[in-house]
Length: 576
Image 1: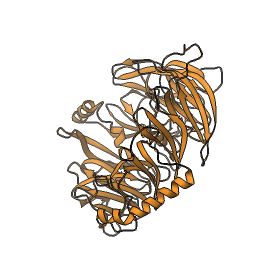
Image 2: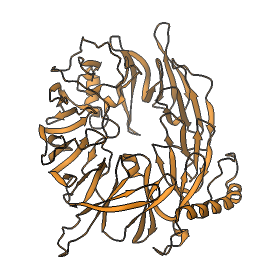
Image 3: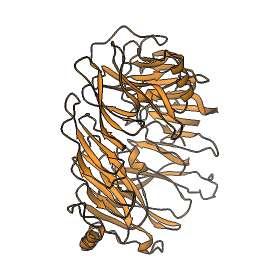
Image 4: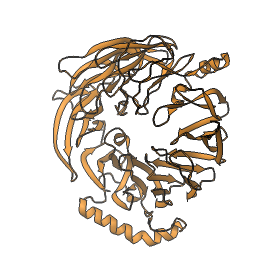
């Protein structure tokens, strides 16, 4: 299963075509409010932004020779476009400049600046490593010493002031609306912060947990938080209330981003924690009190789902396997015993509410699909090399897998198999159907469209087949235009040029029997927008041409010497 599975997601930018060459500061401005971030890129002269239908805007100019040399020095190790952020109305832009590198811990810090598009650049704070804009003219940031500070713009004089919130933090998170935040101190204490409409702090920090070494999961609104103590205990907070224990002796976790629920593996003889007990209770007391509850919960699940403790299939004793549990924000339920592996790879890139679990050991594993509080037996087993790959549909209740199945003469190519589809519901698996063959893996499946391919041994590319129809043989990556549908861009005939892969970018509209329209040669990087437009880098060396293609077919050269542009966090789907 070497085919890499990363979500084929898209950026939410809506760029319109216009004609402009070079990177100059524009004079025309749109009166419409901006609801999405612009395209951000940089060259040796500065940082730039491009909004729909408007002139290119300059964010920062690398005027000094020192700053230009710093940008040249950090190439390939740090992307300054990733340090750009905006206020909610996109009228104020934040960025870092005058970078300095910590040679011991290998991180970069810089001078945090802010500006309105028509205004002067203002210094917000020094030596900032990470920051998040809040509501109004305020920023929460961490400096190179680990101190967390709240910086805000004074109404009188327009100067920025800062107050230290904590002397040392391990992590901090800010809600999507900028009105809430949590931070974890070096002493393992977790605090909650609240902010007003102008970014002002409301009240004092509230301590909601202690003994925490890591923030494991935080929802966008911070309504759901999980933390761990580094010794196997998992804690949970709902609505920034004090942390409660979910379980102890946990060995693996899978957080489901869509629901904020948790699957976890724990030792067979440890007991899930009672969320109603105070966190100061001892582990021993909790285990003794809840042992009967665990037994009853396990029997209830086995009775309802028909799942029995599995030991005969693989010969493992229960003590050698783990117990799989499901936590829905209120209580934990036991789903399976004798589990060897928990995987959330597939849930991360699809619907966000599915996961897989391996039950068994040695050379024999049964594979279960986890859906909320149910463990559905897929009927698949990892008995040998017969099972080559697994995948979910991103929008339908379908489950795909690739089986190595030689024909009657046994002449099927090694490491190639047939794609099968199984439908399922909340109760279990339904019918099975063979779709097409001669592939080694599935990279994505959405809306009944299956993207698969055959790897080339010892190469970083693969063929790309959509529902069994091969589009190209040497494909390095692709991106879908829509979440549901088959239209896509893909990079074919890819060759390695130094550390880069360069190839021909093709746009395919999903028409059967066609392989798509070739757009540009020598493409090393690209990003697909939600409307079907695309931004790409083409050329050789560090500086490249930055092009924008509209969905109507128009194209625009944004920069003839760009070094890089900002990507979405999710990235593209690689062929391997």
